[in-house]
Each structure stands twice: as structure tokens, then as C-alpha cells.
Length: 118
Image 1 (tube, rainbow, N blue to C red):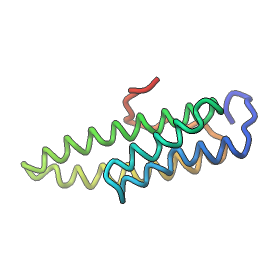
Image 2: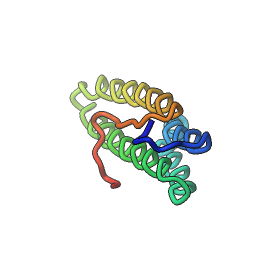
Image 3: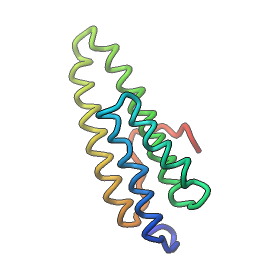
Image 4: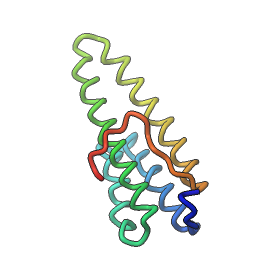
């Protein structure tokens, strides 16, 4: 739970969607940013929980995008191919873990996430 605060099922669902929406990035260019951004903008004023989880998801997706760009540049020296694969797998696994934890009402903080949005 989060600091003794009772979460509604709606809060948990939209908090989870803020993370799951990032999976759109595997299908739509920039979907990993657009999906969480839409969920966050829709619910941030209605729920402090969704606001927090939306920011967490967006910060992670911005960070992952930067890591992917750097890995893409490094493909010129071949190591980037492995890094791109690693970034993709890491992102997928972290999104799934975050979604499950948040759906259970737990706080989740992504590793290697740069806090752009506070």
C-alpha cells in the first residue's frame, strides 16, 4: 500500500494503465511516450496516485528512449545491436513488473529512470 492511503479500484486500474500504455511503443512509433502521457493527462488531476504513477512511467519511457537512441548510434560499432536488444527486453520486463505491482496498490519506482518530470 501507499503510506496508509486507501486506493480505489479505479486508481489502481488507471495507475496500471499508465504503465501498460507504454507497450504501445512496440507497435506505434513514440507510443511508449504517447500512451502513458494520455493516461496521465486524463487522470492526474483526479488522483494523486495516478499522477505519481503516470510521472514514473513517463520518466522511465523518456529514459528508455534516450538509452535506445544512444544504442542506435552505437550500432555503427556493432555493440549497439546488443544494447538495443537489451534495452527492449529490459523495458518490457520492467513495464510488466510495474503494472503488476501497481495493480496491487504498491508503489513502484523504475531502476535506471531519470526524473525529468517531478
